[in-house]
Image (cartoon, rainbow, N blue to C red; front, side, top):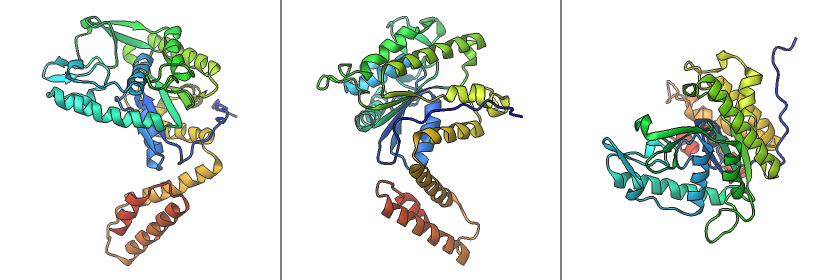
Length: 332
């Protein structure tokens, strides 16, 4: 008897390998996948503006990076003792506005370079509910603990989401002034909808939000051949479909659930050769994190010599994979 409904996911019409730079943006689920890619040495940058949940804020981040917008202290707002940016996550906040703008500037430069180099971009939408600041009339990426009375809450429409992203995927879109192409044009864009539940919105409202995101994403994938959909949401909701695959907060996926999604991602995104390379890298990375109880013993030295040689050979075979950090640990 079959007690699950496994999802058949067609392979992407492209393959990701270590020669391709990547950029992952959106909800914290994007950070989970990007973290796993980074651990097996894929060159990837994640969330240069911090975690972003709604599609309009993600689209605004892409426009800012493409147009090389510079954020100064005049773009910040003070809340209590902290200066914040409504376009950025709270990790940039600080009592000194100059520190905030410097942090934003460094992250934006890294994000601009990543966007220019990226062969693929992972975009994860978290919610269709947005908050508009009444004073400025803009959708904010983060309310930064301002009173709820200062915002208007509403749900984005499918058309709004599609209209925000369509120009970026088109040849004549919203690139920088020097480049008329959309900033995502010519890149492989992997859309996902985060399986993380936004229970504060309410269960019915969360379902309506996810449905809106799904319809918008599928419309973008239908229109643009370089866009694909990876069903992370459906894997949690329909394949795993059990509370044991959630963390204790009943909101975020458990570690085993994220690992399962990662394995399904591997199946469709990587060639068999790249998957084999990932396994080799993973074994060496895990060995480097091992801390022996008796490092001075001959068996411990033999262990380090063995994996040092494995890392050296891997780098010799695949120069694009940097194992120097692990080699230094084995050398020590």
